[in-house]
Image (cartoon, rainbow, N blue to C red; front, top):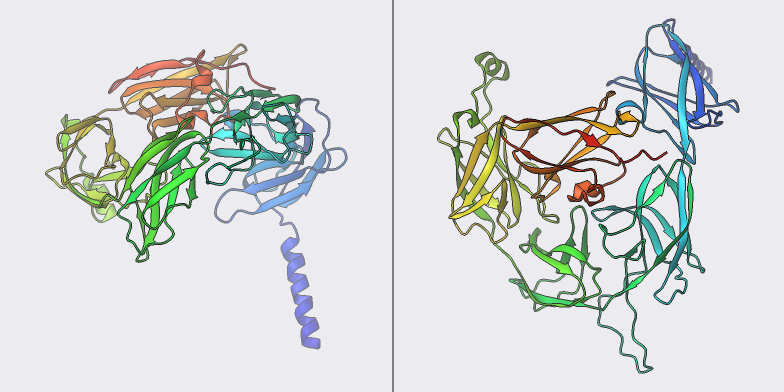
Length: 534
């Protein structure tokens, strides 16, 4: 017993010693305040998160007067944040939602102000085509690319409410529970089975056409009415070619930019007949397991609309082994040898490489799966490349892929189409030197805008690799370096708008700039921004 008491005593003493502030400890005092009114905010959670591998984190709750105090803080660099239900910490300089805090040994800082802004909400009703309320419909904020956030469900009066919204413009979508992928019901009473498709405010079925709802800081937007759109019950049918007779569990994979949905319905003979897939563009393939390996057919582009799609064929295309050759348009595009001192430090210079990265959604793309060293004569060899589209990437700087030629088929840019396999053809990659760059200023009616988000989208958008983002500095200046030559659209976009990631800048047509980038260009693209949302 004495040993146990002694151990407990030592442990308590050690804990007390560990919690006791060191002589060089710093402290931070301040207040959580309403970003608009300046009023104190009680019971906000204040966090000091240390930077570095051995950094510590500290916290406190604000008092009824909004004040907080954190003592015994080790000197160092921290990020300070405040959190409170129903509020958010607005972005400051550079778009950051944290405040940088640097504390010296023994420093006592008493002036840290952490602003919190109230969140907004959108409420309204979901109705059917006859104007009757729809119960149990899901209502979401649609961020594009198949991504949804802030979920709600309608009550028996068709009413919904979406809360926790930061200032921004939002697309709101309503949908009823998905119908089974089976033919329409046969009814003898003269009625027909009704199909409602996901519908955006106000009454449209596609993301680009949706009316965006503006939510300002703390605003409660009411009266949003979404009337669901009826659509014909269309059928998708076809056959999966090459499925072994004994295979079970063949699924169809409907893929979009950032999401995929599997669906059963493929029969033992490989035929399928699927009903009620939501209208949209998809990349369709079939997948199954064979010998512990995943098998996937080559993807096919489809668009589900108002009419049925018949006689599709999904085929397994054997992986390709590709012999390739890099052709340099100019000497500056060639990989440069590493300096001797750098080579000595690294042990040996790493060989330049050519890599294929999948741009087709739903097609696995393990990092480094399709990489080849580049030989001194510019040749390379890739093995086991599945049927899909790929972006051809180079590992050395100051060079970009101008065109790729598979056999006799030339494709401008760096996207290689292998959906039909390579057919044993060789690949030629034309490489040129010199990127361009774009600089400029973002302004609104009040002048230069700090922390503005700039989106640069290639006109020949294929995948997320064709979008680049930048943020303006304190003077409203931005710079985008290493821009591959080509035609682009550029605009100052809203922070919460994911449309640019899908290649769409339609909502910014009145302020976007069209720009042509050539090798070695340093272009100026001064941009206007929509009036800020408060």
